[in-house]
Length: 108
Image 1 (cartoon, rainbow, N blue to C red):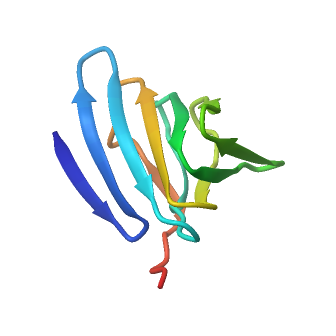
Image 2 (cartoon, rainbow, N blue to C red):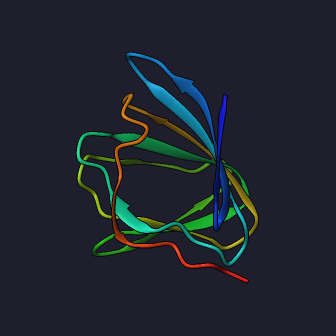
């Protein structure tokens, strides 16, 4: 397992296989990821605990415990923690495929 520390807390890379990848995202309340997209990676995000907003180009999707969303390649998005949250991400195997459009900021 690989741990990647972020301003919004951390990612735990739990699977990086030839066919698929998996992460656990831990996001603090009122913290957010960068605005970004993936050139090749398609991902499904499942809210295991907490509540987040997924900010897309035309809409905001709120995920509460038990909700999920699938994001196709090149979908611009940002995740904002409405509560302290734990998300499971299952995706195609390109875990490091990220194009940041706006960096994550340091939250206090």
